[in-house]
Image (cartoon, rainbow, N blue to C red; front, side):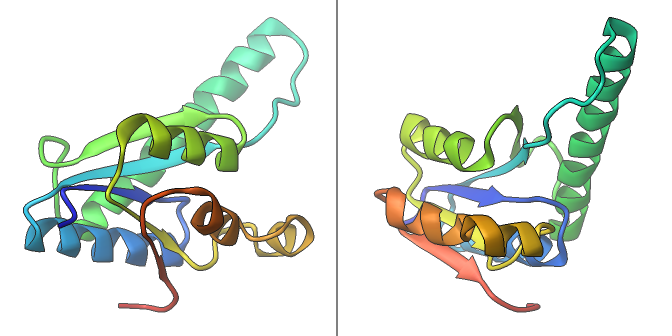
Amino acid sequence: MFKNILVLVDGSDFSLNAAKVGSSMAEKYTGKLTLLHVVGKSFSKTTMPELELEIAGLRAEGSQILANALKAIGKNENEVELVLSWGNPLNIILEEAEDKAYDLIVMGSRGLGAIKGLLMGSVSERVSKSVKCPVLIVKDLV
């Protein structure tokens, strides 16, 4: 049923729980699991050396978030596809969902930007209204 599952991770406990649920579903349905982290921060540095350092720091932070999610589900990089992307999180998620035809998207009900989410609207709500596949929103600790 769910052969291609996308889990969105941002480093929050909610997203780690979503990763656990997505992993469990991938095991149950013998599906492929992809973890996606989107770096949505704009750059603040202006000189090239400073910008390169900032990009390297953000890349390292994003890679660590994916590594933590992998550890939380007890998998290694050979068993799960890891995607680190840059840009507007909503746009990247929607592009990824359309490009790879996922059967299910799993995400936490809240992320690290709770206040920002209140001001801009919930990413989880916007994703669930915009994609063609089912979206499972994990609300609490598993």
